[in-house]
Image (cartoon, rainbow, N blue to C red):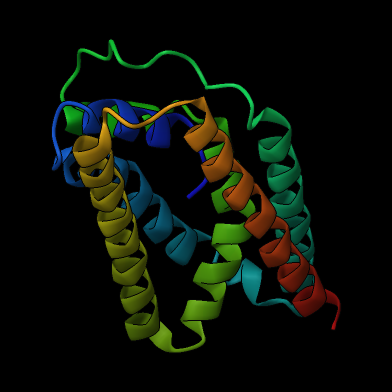
Length: 184
């Protein structure tokens, strides 16, 4: 739900097609799924140490809080005019994901904690997590693009502010939960 390049492209492409979000999620997954696998394979052992898990939870929670505050500060401005994106929806999802440094920061902190927790249930737990995570992205971006497509004539700055405000208010709640879990 974090506004950023992928969300911006989804909204822009959603004005053209109701299924753009599904295709954007495919491009997003081209980057995200291998990253999850690398975290599982290369860093799983490192993340089993209690101190590392707590540090990831603490840093991830603080990051979520920071992201929520930043979102709230920028809710009054619309991020770049992406209506002129000329690439396919799949390529747009891949490019928007790969070019977003916050995506990698998220996976290095919050995402790694989620992968580590999924490994408590073995390979099946990880595979279930990876599939569920990607399906959430898929259906979320599909929902966003369909909603934008159906309501494209109604979007204005007021609607934008409300959506960003709600998202900005929710992130610190999750951040608090991560921090509480790390120190509790």
